Image 1 (cartoon, one colour):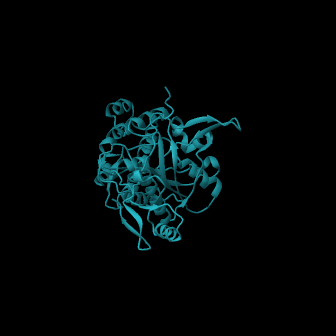
Image 2 (tube, one colour):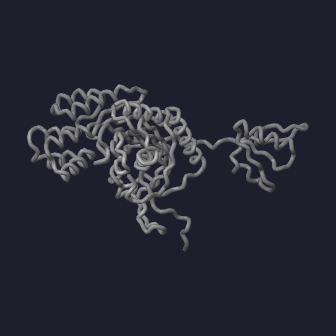
Image 3 (cartoon, helix red, strand yellow):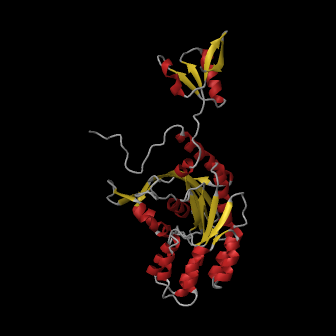
Length: 384
């Protein structure tokens, strides 16, 4: 028995009217980004593997599909994230000296789903800012993210703010090995207190205790004040808390929370980080943050910060879309009919031509009106 119509696990088609909803959202967000000065780029779906995974992209290795190029014999990767590609474009192709603002929309593939309810194909939309190391760039990116979230229409939006500089300051001061840092990073991300306590047993002074207390530092902006009283007075921690304090002042009627254990992308992010959530969803619909130096391998280590969101996740959190209404018009070569159809389409109406013999399938057209000729004129009437 043939199953040629079956898709691989965690891949799915997007059908009408959801596809129209996704496409409309993509256009809205890219138009929004352009009003902020972000220029669109379209990187290829595949690149040489080392280009996708070098530097900031190393953590994507397990997520990346790999194939052999029939032309060169080299290994290609199907992008799992568009951000490293945009960093390559900034560093290697544009080679600008000042601030560069870029945006994008496209598919990305993962070898495994991030959760049981997720697709392995992401429809990624994002914005990246290169060339400015100050907190002003992070504030602009966070502000743009909040505007983008509002544009989606998702309910119960909230954004979690974190900063990898706090973990880096504690780990650096304690002189921890690379392997122990990675293990602690994973435990903090999972808020796994027993594992944290076991890993910090041999860490001297109050540094181990501070690492264990990071998961409890979660809530509103008051968490920043509490952290100053709990964490050691290290320059890296003071700088990180100061940056979080500035970011938390951005108010777009979206809840901004602080989570000092919200860590992602070991060896990738190196500053403030954001994660956005909607409704009762436990998984983030958008993520971002600072990732300086991503373009170093391409000859230009520029400051960088940005975010991306997955349109599939966004649409899944919205009410079921309604089909777009339309006007059913008869097939014909009458000049008046053709002129009327063209005028309606130019005004933004959806006009569907009813081909001969299709009258019994009118309901499938999605039209709620019909174009009829009355007294020599083409008029719009309700479709029974």
